[in-house]
Length: 341
Image (cartoon, rainbow, N blue to C red; front, side):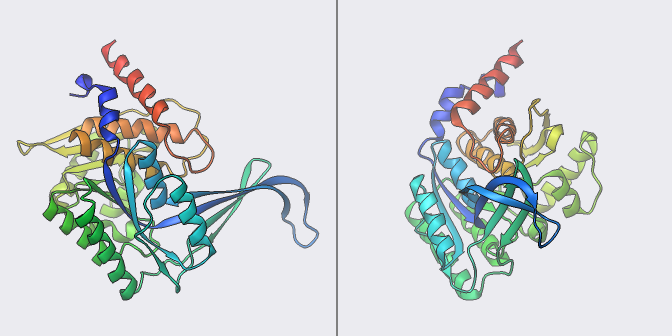
């Protein structure tokens, strides 16, 4: 089925699609400079700052990727009531991303990851964050905001992006999935270990190999596809996930999809050969592209390979970046042409 796809029509169909993103948003800050001496106060390098850049990260990067593909993303999330909130909202609004449902909580900081780069080397990361679950008042506000967007905007896809920062509580996760199932809205999940077993009933479940292995408490290998297929299908049946997509780093991706006739289709795609610069944010790109592509095609093979190509493309750049739509289209066309040869 992947060979018959019209790539231009596929990308055109993504434009304007409304998507709700729920999860942990943050600022990715990069402090870049040069190192020419060691501090006299301690045996550490002194970085003379040349530039400071900030980018939306976490679930906000999911929204950035969706926007880059032409979709219309809405974010439901929680920040602090601080300077970081204003900075993050401004970054998102500049890209045309809806921020009205981002709730301020005075008891928490706006999550910020400061990366110190000296002489083009990543030397240190400093995290400003709270990893405790949001309180009940904030949780209720978040659920009301989610329901309002579901009622008024009627998105075709909801993405849950979990970074274990406390926004995706068990109650929030279950509410999102149950409401979307009731409304026939696709849900896509990028899980973390803490909440791994909370996503029963989600349409798309996208862990990486390490997360999946830890989640089912088994030591799985990327080169043993027969065992992977068996374990993924077993997990699918238990957790009622129609589509499980597993990223395998340099070994590519694989997926299992519950077909209309009740059987499971399993397939593996190799990774493209690339110069990897930075894997930060690649998972955000994969869940964005896979979720959006599946929402418009209902084709797991197309969604998986397109996400595989997109994840590889963003790894060629330093820092957290969004996928380039034109480059992805070109890459997908090249892949389709290679299948005909």
